[in-house]
Image 1 (cartoon, rainbow, N blue to C red):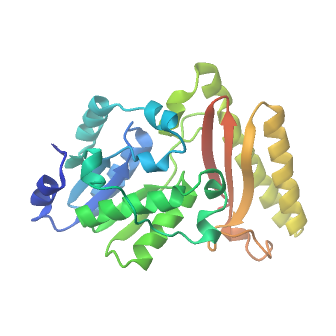
Image 2: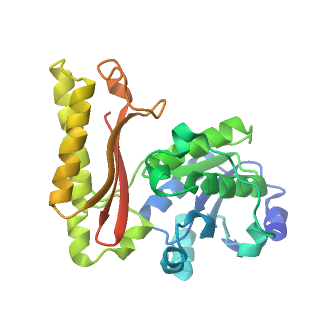
Length: 286
């Protein structure tokens, strides 16, 4: 496995590679990332993992500063996983001058849920992903399902800008208690890690409620709102600060209009704070 830190050296390594798979990350590699590496190895002859903590994605400098950076451990995990190359660029490689041009993500996708709480987040994510795709020219690009809204944004980016790469969405990887793996889980105390499984438990309970209501032919918009409200309140009573707990139509990424007809398209998405840590998760109905 090679470690390359500059674009010129990277592109020299890639000039003879035909089927490149790109797994973009911000490091602190865990089994969720490695599942994407394994997915990439099945369809690609050459697998790149990029590690770049993008400062534009953070709401404040302190959050950026404390983001876990574990390069040596990351490299060992990636080496053992069979990754061919790690691209670990310096800030000036990605942003040689002050960034003035950004991807304009439409409001219906970029300014709801995560976009409501993280200003310009999806514009900045799209911009860095576009740069990485242009630099590496992959045949496939891989993102995890845990950050579902982000994955939808990147998928549309690939489609609408004719980037020539296939977008592949990997399944969410969870620990034994159901907690979705995330680099930010490192912020949780040992007690909080146990409590953190409650978010998944509420997503799963809401899923069962939706299935049960559908089986009884009684699923309607009022019931969706009631399910959302009940789980927000229950999480709040347990000490969580809930940003959202929302049921959406995953095909159009809007609230369902006719849920009895759109049952198979429903997804429950949530973001909530446990102490000082913000966790994001989702669960598809099927």
